[in-house]
Length: 269
Image: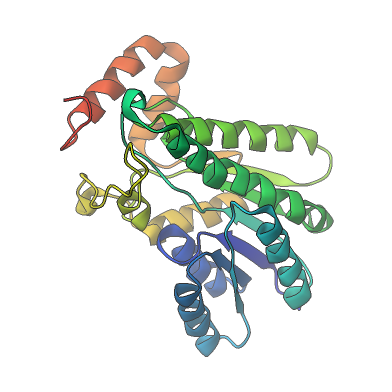
């Protein structure tokens, strides 16, 4: 019961799954949240086979406020505390706004923004008691609007605004708030990205071999929490984007357009 407790949304695969294993290795208890309960239970069993009762899986649709509330309640019932909340669950999109159904943008806001709001709202009283950490797994799309990803950038900008305000409100409470922006990562998020009509786009146009691994991303995030960082941008390309956004936004717009227009099956062609 003295172990610290971390809740991870989107824990059934990718970065969330990697975070679960890495935090367990660092002596945390972990609560795994996602819609796919079968995958969650597999991860829970794998962790608990090596460490008795170190993981709890809770089937959660983070777009539903009541399910996020139950996630927090079950965490407290099982472990009695919350030290870290990692808002990792997310969905992406690809398509020109002109041809994209508005429902696609609504879905991205429900998952990426409102999911973060719901879980943070109900976890906050417990995080304040432990002077814990709230983490939002974002993207460079939260710093610069990316052509062909209107809904994704909008939802990540919204997440940033929410978390930055939460940080400002809690300057004197001890709450740590961090935004983490990985580079392109070899995860299912890319394959489940929505097209203009709301259907998953399928295989990503990018090569996985050139991407970050979920384990590497997870370790950077955990190190950032330990150091109580405000923001982590994990690639040189991302860091350059943040700098250009401040000093040469017009040039950055042209660069992002050129880069994304070169993708296979780019919507700009």
